[in-house]
Length: 291
Ligand SMILES: Nc1nc2c(ncn2[C@@H]2O[C@H](COP(=O)(O)OP(=O)(O)O)[C@@H](O)[C@H]2O)c(=O)[nH]1
Ligand SMILES: [Mg+2]
Image 1 (spheres, protein in one colour):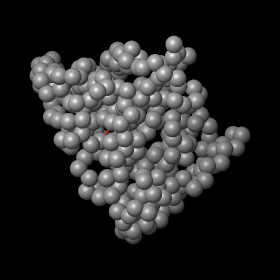
Image 2 (cartoon, helix red, strand yellow; image 1 turned 120 degrees about the vertical axis):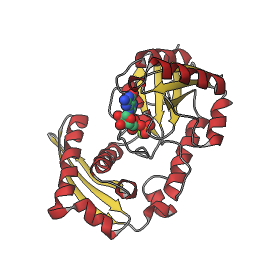
Image 3 (cartoon, protein in one colour; image 1 turned 60 degrees about the vertical axis):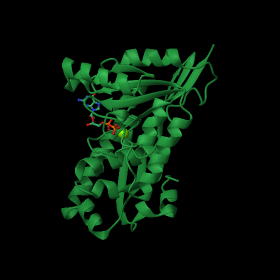
């Protein structure tokens, strides 16, 4: 018998969804920072064994959308409700319900198994944990509750085993060699965006989109060229920095990360361009793969 299914991770921004997906897959597929809205897409991470295939989905944190990009991000979350075989609803200890009530009601009335993950218990204590368990049992009686730490991997093995138990009988959905539904170019773009999120403050990270224009794998090296789009001229100057030093730092950090991901030497060139108010334009969102 072969089992397969979609296991979709949903929750508020910054609770640790991407950290968990990477821990489950054993690869750094989804970027992680301490900033909300780091994840903008639905990203699948696939675990293959002879007798099962788990397709994890990491999703953007649930927010009330303020512009078109965020609306598209929430449509990725919506799609994750629609095909789930198991829903992993992740919260932090001390946190109350999802920022969007209609999403929360969907979880309450879910027909598929829901596991409520109380994440970051490494930062908590027994008393707070017990309070949280009591609170969530009351408002989400249909869920199994599991305290975890995605970061220190506390209880992640237990979670994984429980997911395998819950998987339905099914043939595989993806090639059994596949690791993700995303392309190498997408992952490269995300790594660059992660370094931008880490290196710049205020509105800059939210105004940035990265497009990988070239990805050429040679025998000993991968050559890449990427364009960083911002919304305004002033942001372009900030990204580049004094004598180009800020951009250079991003390039070096991204290259190191890529070399460890691809296990190969990487050469990368970065260019910064202005695409006025792209976050609010449907045709631009389409171009960047959000619609
Ligand atoms: N202490 C602690 N920090 C965590 C844990 N899981 C995630 N984090 C941190 O929380 C922040 C947000 O993580 P991320 O996975 O990007 O959250 P997401 O927005 O829900 O995808 C990062 O700084 C992570 O290192 C955990 O179990 N314990
Ligand atoms: Mg994330």
